[in-house]
Image 1 (cartoon, rainbow over the protein chains, first blue to last red):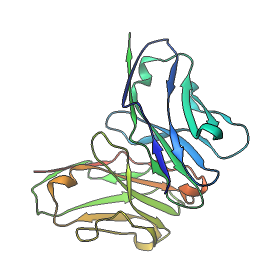
Image 2: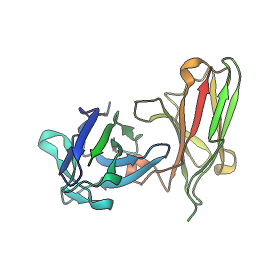
Image 3: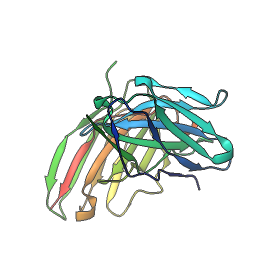
Image 4: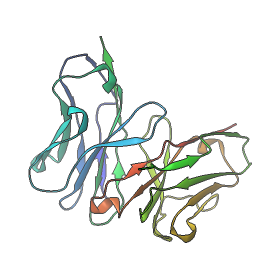
Length: 112
Length: 116
């Protein structure tokens, strides 16, 4: 069965610092991979997704993610974090018309 | 473009009572989902519809939860009777086609349920 692991429950970074959120997946074939962001009291919003092709994917709000098949990873990065990026981030995997499975999330705190 | 609409936003009920949540997906979206998100956890798929047919309801507690999607548009999720562990946010979402085929899933703001 497909699964997603986000090893970091909570991360704190200083405003202006770089950010990397980790995501490892388990899937039997080439997956579809997604990163969503959830602000408090809101639904989830898609940041970016990977299907195939270029392994470095650009998303909204200055985020990017890199697909590494050998490591079964799809880590999310941002070179300079803004206070408005404080939220919870979810990695998800899908494929083969099966359901999309979400990870448990990483809560990002941004300090001045 | 209007997003996914859900109501009510907040509901407090006593255990063993019933509750119903309503969802109106984005126009033209064939796939509709209900997710349960317990505090501190990721969304868990309860049921997925393709038009008005059920694609996946493997994680729906069928002894107490039911969902329908009449005419392939709006959907209702019902819980009867509610248990304390049902306290969660119920997220409705929709997409043009199955998310597992790479379609972007659009989420509503959620319906917050507290069972006391």
